Image 1 (tube, helix red, strand yellow):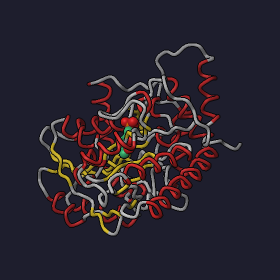
Image 2: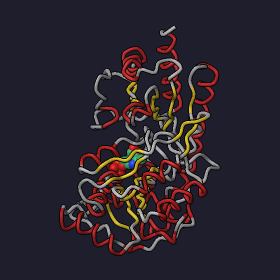
Image 3: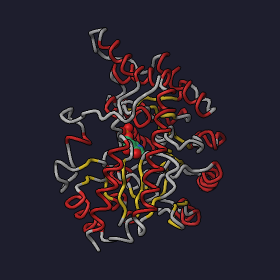
Length: 393
Ligand SMILES: Cc1ncc(COP(=O)(O)O)c(C=O)c1O
């Protein structure tokens, strides 16, 4: 089956976070490229499975720990990554961000330190602060137009007694890096030296550019599995964020008990909804063809933006974008004051972005473009940016 990603699907009025709610200051008619979900229709097998589930007419309490779902999830890991995961090690969470909060509750106490690498997905900051833990930021190094980890600084931070572990973003939102096995291995070696854990948020794992390989952290360091948690979900991959189902891989048996202590005993959020389950099973069992075509389409959108920047925005640059559908656009050559840049983009370009500065001050002068939309919308976005920047001259 050939999918049509050029189709513009009307999302207005569906209570869509991306379309029906703008960030503060953005006009209501702005081109919306902020929230990280996609403007593409879901794969046909998912829609069919949901129709079939609706036809069963009753939507009562539903079991996540069922053979069909566990088979679909672990089968996906095996087929796509050659990664063997025991069914008993996969746990439900209504989202990856809630999972980060649950894990902080399960593994740390108030005041404990957690390493993150800014510029990074801002809920990492919010969850650490919101749970009264302490941020230890090890900024990524930005050099020659792309990012790498600062291992020297990481070593200093891991050595700190207050630090219990790290939340890793892999692939990295917003900078688009897909960490290599070597880079991940070096990171694990440092964590290991100090006996600290790593929670690896791999929600963007399936969305790499064709030819770029993502490796799950647990596959990189199986010998350190009792200090690693990998967070995955079908939400980014198959545009199912509203279904609120993610799959958290926790090999450490003690930690499994602690996890259940939080999500079951403390909060009773251990039950998925029937649509999330039906959609996830269909996505992982039958969604591969759609995903392969989607990745081609995203590759082309990203190629277009890179070309546009090179030819028409000589003072701007973008990173390699090895993974995710998010483009990290460096506009410091035009305007480095983040508030002035925001105003220009909101009022002159009439675009609603996730502004670079919300990912940490390392993001000042950057805009994050969500390129998961029909190509003509991506073209519109780039033309608006250019027109707005032209007014600066
Ligand atoms: C790195 C990362 N983690 C987590 C999420 C959101 O996860 P969830 O909706 O499952 O809480 C996002 C969404 O943009 C993300 O980019």
